[in-house]
Image 1 (cartoon, rainbow, N blue to C red):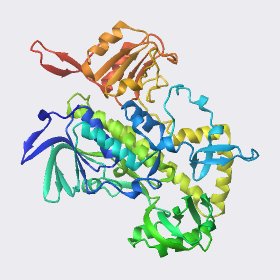
Image 2 (image 1 turned 90 degrees about the horizontal axis):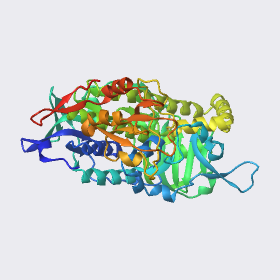
Image 3 (image 1 turned 90 degrees about the vertical axis):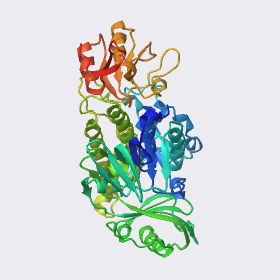
Image 4 (image 1 turned 45 degrees about the horizontal axis):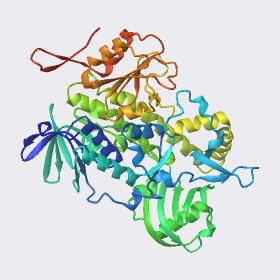
Length: 534
């Protein structure tokens, strides 16, 4: 649905947008899609004039997508547009000990310690149905940005490159954003502008956390003697290096982040010096084609909102890219924030709905930061970390260990702590399949809340009708209902309420009041937002 003219009001030759988003990376673009899906007018400002970069494409731009991200793409009808994973189905094949040439698929890693498909017991994840989406897939930054850009453009989002947010001022009603000599006005501003976020710094957000232990390097080089380096991931007595393809290297030098923070230019001579030190070889680099540095600095904003300014993605939290969870964390922010901010703009949000964005997403971010810190502690040079790696390696190669690590890395265990006694409350809704072979994921493309009724309870339909287009009522027999009679699903796919037997309408109403408001129409056919009671 495209933004309609009444969504915007002209001011000084510019419209007043519902939301301005700083940053056209995957998080900013997907948030724009979610807001536009709810018919909000959105302007995205991106400082880069050309969104293309070699660092967004293989091998540097490859990222692992976790289960919540894959479910999100599926629920918005975007999953089928991913192509990279179809070409890289088994990127990490190895040979299991004692099994000769039989290939064994590495499903992921923790601090470079692999876990394998044949050790994972998916039956422990009782709410993952046979028709669930894949728990992990490979994509790339460039691919996701292209998909989200097409989607946002089709929904009427205004995307402008070469315009960096340089300053802003907010009042009780709006935010005025400066980009050089231009200014733009919106009801809300969201910073999705990365780890060096101008929005975060200008907005006075505290960014608390820990300092780095290493400088990481991602480089494409020519080498005179590449055979001196071992393929794959190599943890040495002085650091770590990964050679995914000849010349494509990732290096970790435990220098407390000194080089990354020095601002010195990255040269072939410096990369060779670091690589020789970390690999304990005399390998020779003859050319440096592409190179970037990064660290394991781990920080998180102590608030995600200041008045009409919000943060999402790397603007709200940063950590090392170990395990590739930063992209998934940011997209989770966007999915959680999008419908809540849209409801606030449309004045259909219960009191304090927008505050739940921080209370739900901040603990998830803190978990990821600690997960990153734990990996760094195991990768440090020295005997203590080496001893701990051996113990974790033994644990991760057990069935329960591999299942636990896979569940954490893939986001299977992600849950919001919502009010309600049912064990499914706060979890992502299982992908229930109906007798006509459609799934609940197929029904979520429009971004509405859903009351799913497996028993055709007429009173539930009457109840849902009071919420107009906020809650869609769906009734049907599921092939595997898991013993559940009804569930209330938020627009982001999270279960707000569930019942196993006869639904308790008081508990349903209590849950609904937290996330939705009912609609009533007066005699003049003018819609009014009212709080529904039973």
